[in-house]
Amino acid sequence: METVAAPVRTLAVTRAAARFCALRGWGPVEQVTLPDGRRADIVALLPNGDFAIIEVKSCARDFLCDGKWPDYRAWCDRLYFAVDLDFPQVLIPGDVGLVVADDREAVLLRDAPEHRLASARRRALTQRVAMLAACRLAALADPLGAAEMRAALRLE
Image (tube, rainbow, N blue to C red):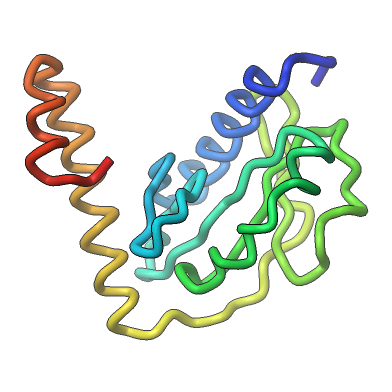
């Protein structure tokens, strides 16, 4: 991936990571506000009911300035980082998964270790992600009513 501005790079890596999820049969939902108030870049529902969170990092500074990512472990069974080819991968801790994006594609360089969610937390997260995804689909069908739907459900 050529040198580009951080927002453009973030968007490209996010799209490649979401495509990575979809190609594996995972259901990716972007920009999910978790019950603790943190916002995950991608929360993916896996076919077996597990959750993966993929945190997108556009550059080393983005990673080094972000101290909140360890909190995401409490809301997923597996935690991954998605970066592009230019990212210094040595910065990514060894106890998380690593997905590397190159243009529109992404490859898994390291799988994430499993840390199981408690069943009550899994149920709450399943409901939150399902409602958010359903509301986003409804907003595509009725763009004018989207703001009212979001306000009524207080999801975003």
